[in-house]
Amino acid sequence: MNTFNGVRIDTFQRQYRVYSGAFCGKSHIDNGGKIILPTSALDEIARLNIVYPMLFKITNNKHSTHTHCGVLEFSAEEGRVYIPFWMQEHLRLNPGQMVTVTSATLPKGTFVKLRPQQKAFIEVSDPKAVLEQKLRNFSCLTKGDTIMINYNSQNYLIDITEVATPSGQCSAVSIVETDVSVEFERPLDMPPSPVKTAPTEDVFQIPIPVKKKKSQEKEEEKEEPKFVPFQAGGRRLDGKSIKMGSSPPVKQGVPPPAETKPAPTTTTTTQPPSTGGGGMVFGSSKKTPSTTSTTAAKPPVKKEEEKPQEKKFNAFSGQGRSLK
Image (cartoon, rainbow, N blue to C red; front, side, top):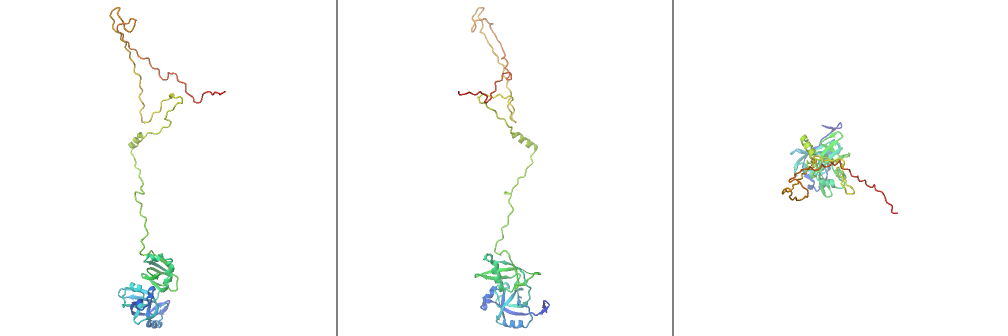
């Protein structure tokens, strides 16, 4: 015996041959989640104590698959049940195969997560408004089902990935006279969002300093001359050379030029040999010894410091003149 909120409830259970809505000329049942039962089922249910709205569980015993649904009307032939085509595909049923229909009691759901199989469904003007309108043809939703919705002559398949009640998740919920929050997952045929790849070494390459040896550092210091300011020479306005009081700066790394001293000069005068006591003498009227060899050193050159210093030129130091 089953109870619901402390009240005893009865169970309706019958076996029927299953067919889709196209066999009875009512293909509109494919756009919802309700079935058509025979009139005898209504007579039996009326005598039982069951919970409304009437919900049923359809089970394919051969493949151990099941789903939940509501009832649209009681107008089917005896021994037959008409179900939506998407439900027949989900339960893996063939037309005329036997199924078990059992009455069910489901809690009211508050949350449903859906995953469209086509990207085109989320590209409609307002997919949530379309879904709200189409779910009115459903009395309950079962986790793992793939329902079908028709919009603008286009059929969209939607997977039920998660259902929940205020007390937590469950396998099936009722959506009659209740507020349900709907959440969409990424469509099945939509490619995943691009993932940022790690930067390559060429783009983000950071140089690592290498410690040099002391010998290499000394060589580099010798090779690279340092900058010394005020090395250039000056020029006079009168064109004369400038005599600096101090020696010109020597570039670093270049040895100073060696000082050159003037070589002593040697003069030799040779007189032609005489012919006798009163012979002829060429080049002079005076008598000189027959052979004279003299070596005289050049007088010492005065140092640069002993020379009188020239008067330095002072620019703009002249006297003015009047045109009068």
